[in-house]
Amino acid sequence: MKNLRIAPFFILLFTNFIYSQEYNFNISEIPSSLKKDANSVIRFENFSINIESQRKMTVTTKKAVTVFNKLGDKNKYVTVNYDSNTKIKDIKILIFDALGNEIKKVKNKEYKDVSQVDGGTLYADSRMLYYEHVPTSYPYTIFYETEIETFNTAFIPRWYPINNFFTGVQLSTFKIKHSANLTINFIESNFTNFNVLVAKEKELVTYKIENVKPIRYEPLIPSLRKMFPNVKVVSNQFFVEGILGEASNWKELGKWKYDNLY
Image (cartoon, rainbow, N blue to C red):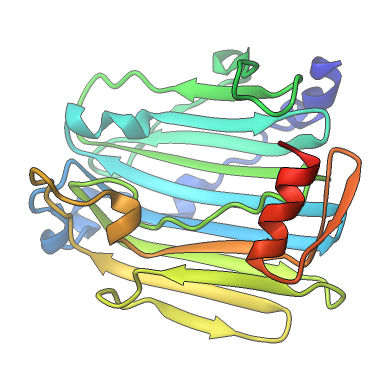
């Protein structure tokens, strides 16, 4: 069954690649302040979440990372999780050299499809589609775009625009669009020392951060999640594995998860 679920998006996987014309990935376009002490620089990372209803959510990710050395190679992996209630609608990956020239289009046969089932996995059919780039020279830029559609709306992705030490960030955005019938709650953490721009409309919330210099790792330094900006999101009505849920605050959400999942 898993082949049937993911086969449709492979049909058009590499048909209309125009990204090399849309973006300039020459490393000269990166501000020098972001390259100092950097193993990698996030050129852009755009998350867009559309909660269309209590039972449907679409998550789109578009990201480009320039890797300067082997210490930045944790960015060479692209992974997408899926299961019986989560479909991969689209995935595209391109690799560029230091001058911004496209040097590789990832082919469908280069993806690995593996099970995620273990003692800590919630769903018995959880799987992961992933690609591992094997660099032959540095620096390189890996660009990818993914889109998933899921019926499970209880677990909305969080925003972590700064998720590694020695990594500069040119641009990161996080957009949450939702149905007028839903109430979306946010917990914003560690915004004080960072210039995070927030735009809140009736059914759309946007977070944006730009030009963050690499943070050096030092002994006894707090964890990334305690230091850097992040946003946690939850809907007042949600759906997971055939169970409808409702919670008006974080305490009620925790109780619901404990009663129904754990």
